[in-house]
Length: 110
Length: 110
DNA sequence: AATCTTTATCGTAATATTGCAATATACAAA
DNA sequence: TTTGTATATTGCAATATTACGATAAAGATT
Image (cartoon, rainbow over all chains, first blue to last red; front, side, top):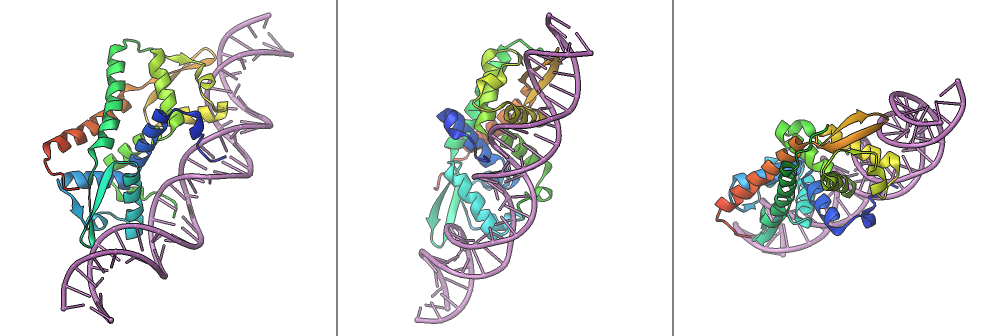
């Protein structure tokens, strides 16, 4: 127990869940917002923007990268990070689909 | 340790994270998809749709409800659940904002 | 009232996540 | 080569999540 029963769900369900889970932490939201705000790749100042220790930030960045929400490339002895549009678009499309479906549905029993 | 440092982030960051976290599990994605598919409130057949035991499903429903993604109302000795558009729209808007911002940005250094 | 049906809660075990100190790695600069 | 700077990894403690059996609660049915 304690383990998510991944095998019993579809690949799409698992992928969406993984994407959402990656965003499901305020530090990772903050990282995305910061990357968006500076409007560029960031080389180095992510740690100083967050109220967390460097290893913790590094771990959060890794999770965002694993799931395809950010990209990172080595730039000298720093690493440049920026948002990977693909992941964000996938989520946006998904919720867009839900919103559209809901709008078409007139039922509102609850 | 082990606890998210909620106090150090903004209310918006925490709220978005909570919403995303709630969707960050394939069972909860599956619940949302099912509610959407049947195009109505569901009274009773959610458990049978999922590969999980009844207490587990009940717990997932509670989480979705707490965060405002579904609504539930008592209907006889069953409970009717349906999607709460507000939460979904909040998430959709947020990702839409990111997508739009990204489109305006020409920078693509990574 | 006794029973059935449906959903919620409690208790608990297994696993995952969060956070950080310490340390490692990799490159730059002196 | 040594030193400095930036990021990653390891190891560990604290807490959270996931899942389910057992049981409770609430209304329906007989």
